[in-house]
Figure 1: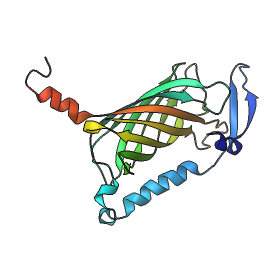
Figure 2: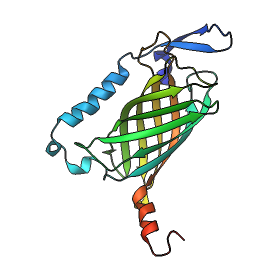
Figure 3: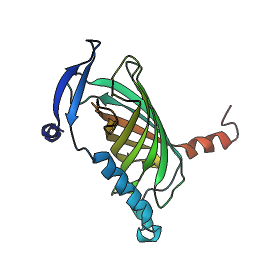
Length: 208
């Protein structure tokens, strides 16, 4: 990840409280918009233009992630999240809903869209984009209540559809506020296909 470091030029500014520092970054200002444009372009192309085996089999999934925010700063912060991806697809694009929090009770609830692109030997690439409501509470101040989330994940699928993977996520308010520190998250993730749970409950004695 060290090759990303030259792209992040930062300076610190103390808030009026004297306790919280904001990091104002010069990043790719249109990175989130580009990610959204790519996913919307996939929606606009007829499904027949893509071979079906380019994309993972649609399944209801529950994803759990554990990682670190502020990974390019000197004081990274532990965080975790849970995400639901239904099996519904529109030209291969899936919706998702996610809730995330951190060690200082930050809370981020977001919705968005993603693609599940088959690579090879069970590997799946997942670009996604979305947005939602963020509350800093006593933790990381991101400058505004509305935050956008762009992410790229790489997962390996195992028997019966279980997946393990890693993701890189950027969250920022897209300059809706004069203060737009943003944050980057590196996380490990586990993905559970929920049909396995439903099948277990349907079995005689499964819920006992």
